[in-house]
Image 1 (cartoon, helix red, strand yellow):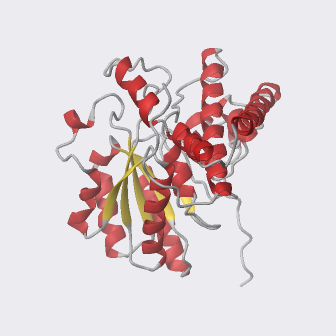
Image 2 (image 1 turned 60 degrees about the horizontal axis):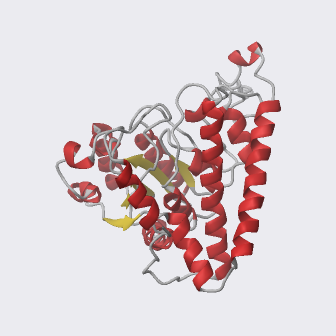
Length: 337
C-alpha cells in the first residue's frame, strides 16, 4: 500500500523538496546498513536506529544556519548526517574504527564534531538537556544570534533535570529550542502509561516558555514550526519548546524485540504516514521528479552508504595508545608576569 498522500501543500521549491528527500533517504539507507552491520557483529554495544523519525531532524535543520548548535541523546545517527557529518566517519565510529569521529573510542552514543557544531550523542537519559542550555548560554554571552537545538525524547521528558533547565533557560532568555522527539514509546512504555499529561510541550508553560506540537512525520510541517521557533530565539525572546510527534519503526535499540506494540500498528504507520513517501508523493504529483529520477537518487545514496560501510570495514581498530588521548585539555602556555 502506498503512503497516504500529504494534505499539506508544499511551501518550498522543487530543489528544496529534493534536498529533503535526499537527506531523509540518506538517513534511512544509512540506518538500514547499520542494522545489517550490527547483525553481522561488526557493531557492538547499543545501536539505536532512527528509521521512521527522519522528518524531525531534516525539518529542523532546514531552519538552521552556520553557527547553530545541536545536541541530542543516543538515537543520534540521523542528527549527524542531517547536519553534514561525513557518513564514512559516522559508520567507522559505529564499528569502533580509527577512522571514526571519535577515533573508534565512542561508538554509537559518543560522537562529536566541532566543525559541524554537533555536541553528541549522550547515553544518560536527559543529561544532554542542561548541556544544551549551556551551549545556548555561551552564544547569549557572546552576543550573537545563534540557536541551540536540544533534542530529547518523551521518556526523558519526565526527568527532573529537564525542568531545572527550563527554569534557567527562561530566567536568562537563552536561545535554545527544546525539541521533544515524541516517538510515543520511550524505551518501551507507551506515553499513555507513563505520562500524566497528553501534550508534552505544555510542560514549558509553568516557566513561561511558549511551545507547540507538530506532526513529526511531515517534514514541511516540521520546517514551518522550526522556522517559527528559530525566529523567536534569534529575536532574543528566550527558549521555545517543540513537541514533534513521530514514530520509530524499530525497537528502542537493536536488541529490543518491541513486543509492547503490534506489527499491524507499525505497518499501518509505514503505509499511511511514512515521512519519505510523503515527500516522494509531492515530488511525483507536482511533476518535480520522475520515477526514474527518484530511482537514480536512491541508487546514488545506496552507493554512498555502501562506501561508508566499506570504509569502516577497512579502517583499522584504534591503537592501544589512543586510550590516553583526548582525555585532558592541552596545557596552555602561561603568560609572562
